[in-house]
Image (cartoon, rainbow, N blue to C red; front, side, top):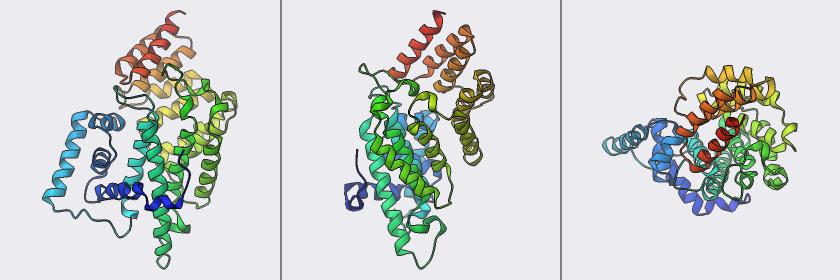
Length: 334
């Protein structure tokens, strides 16, 4: 684990972050900013970025091409901004997606968990936090609400979220490289140092009274990370937090996560109704996998088998397909 260190701001990671900021020029659309940065600087393939963005690979490739053409034809100056604030949103999106690709790879040819990517995302988020604090200090004469109190709450929220997830990275796979679900992970092996740091970061972020989606996600992750056993998980509170997240940053994925939390709090039938109301995720394997789990818990083994089969058809990574095959086999024996 890379410890927090102010010297990071002058390290090799700082140079890479500057390249990311160059790609996050506001003249380029937000989706294209993220795609271009992930491709040119983040080291992700077009297929990996498309999977993370839930868009066809051809669509994602067109975004990158159009972004490059716009930079060239419009003669957009690829220079560092006077303030990183105008590019902070896109940069955080990139760092979030790089970490997620490390947390669970979408590439069929790579390991399910890519520690190098997750670690690099944390390193770069730390550097971003230092840069934001330095910018706030230098601009103290002209207060900026987003830079208040020598920091940015959403950057701190993002770093806390990454650290909460990092803490259990080592327990996500078993010795054969197969996925281990959250409820089955050995919590005694979770990184308590990372959890403690994330708790402190999140506390600092929330004291700034500048709420945002990364902080909300970090609060949710914190509930999981601080629960000593699976039975200790406060699912009603988590379901409520996902409701807030849907309100401030709506997406089908967030709606799916909310449905899972509601199912854990109020029962599978209630959660299943919410899952079936979600649109836009027909090709997303986790939607079908979630339906399979909820149908199984509701006692409909036949429908659960079909849902797991559909999930397996859409899953990209071999580890996920193996997991879905095991779930399908389990319900077929009932």
